[in-house]
Amino acid sequence: MGRLSTHVLDTMHGCPAAGMKVTLQRIHGTHAQAVVSHWLNADGRAPGPLLEGDTMDPGRYCLLFEVGSYFRERGVALPDPAFLETVRIDFGIADPAAHYHVPLLTSPWAYSTYRGS
Image 1 (tube, rainbow, N blue to C red):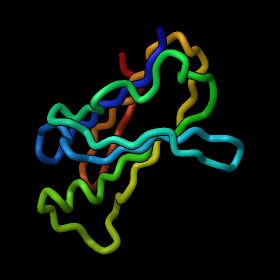
Image 2 (image 1 turned 135 degrees about the vertical axis):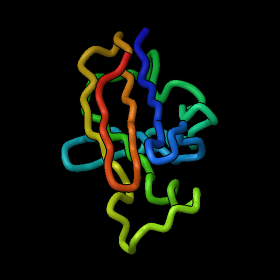
Image 3 (image 1 turned 30 degrees about the vertical axis):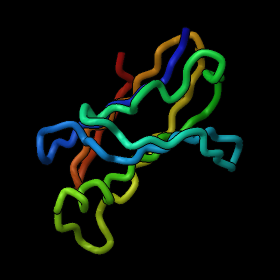
Image 4 (image 1 turned 180 degrees about the vertical axis):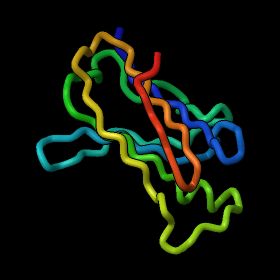
């Protein structure tokens, strides 16, 4: 059974990004439709899969990570405007039976991602 998950690590503080808001969108041409939003738990993970089973449809998706708000809430003084406010990761799901894991490593000034396992 396929599923989509995410995990965020705060590389500035060296810890999971507990409390960061993440929104999954489904992309239809030039339009985006919100699917689900979560605040990450103490491990920097959504409380469950973002998609799984019958909701794992092939197509284009986007994850929106609210990094600016997260770092402000941690007491980090950010410039106005912040260098990174929302990190947007566009990706595709081709095989709905596969596990797609989209981790994010972030600080207020940089981020990286990859397809995890």
